[in-house]
Image 1 (tube, rainbow, N blue to C red):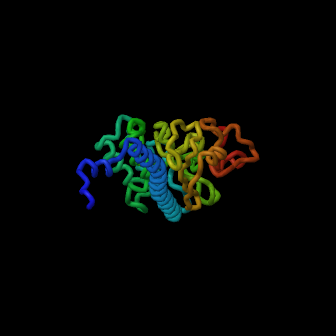
Image 2: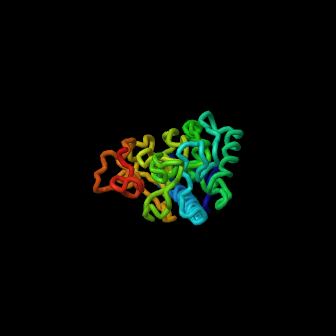
Image 3: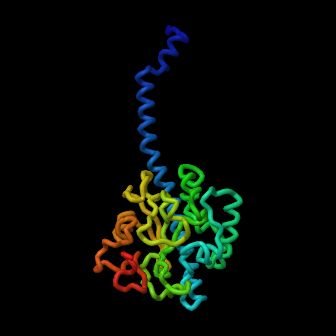
Length: 278
């Protein structure tokens, strides 16, 4: 007749040794290290899909605007005094914190922007990842921006980078369809959001495709989404972008004449260099 095992013997049989526990913990840690990057990439793809759609919607609104205005482009927002694609004239400038009151004032101006009648929502002006980071890891940088309601900037080539007379804009037909009109400004430098227009070399975000970007002058392997004059939108890497723009903060001065105009430097008044080097 078999004896009934004691409670102590049962506990010995089911208990884990220290080595077994350490092995289990190690396996869990390995699985977590494998799973977290996958989840992060999946989340970034979700943000990217929304961001790409935002660009498409804004480009569609731009096209509709030109159809209603004899092919003339909306103003790029070269400064905050005049009405532009994003905001109305006399845009209230931030820079001292995105308080509820300041954001509300800016939103009222956005509702007077040239594209508002075609969109009627401010959500398409913000990259969802930019919206998330402004409340967390990059809150301090975000609060220093002048413009709080857009992640995107437009190419100043629309007004020949400030040289077109009488606050006019060029016609849409002056640009090749693949030329880049809109891109995500680099969130690491608040100065790039002092209005909603820029020169190509002034910086593009790397927030998509990497988590290591900490300097707009360094390639962290990421990229951003852009909208084109033809109405399309796509992803562009940091490497591809600066191959077109030239080195950051150099106005494209080192780019060869044979490479210009290109998708970024495309000023119609400068058929030789597209505005680069000025």
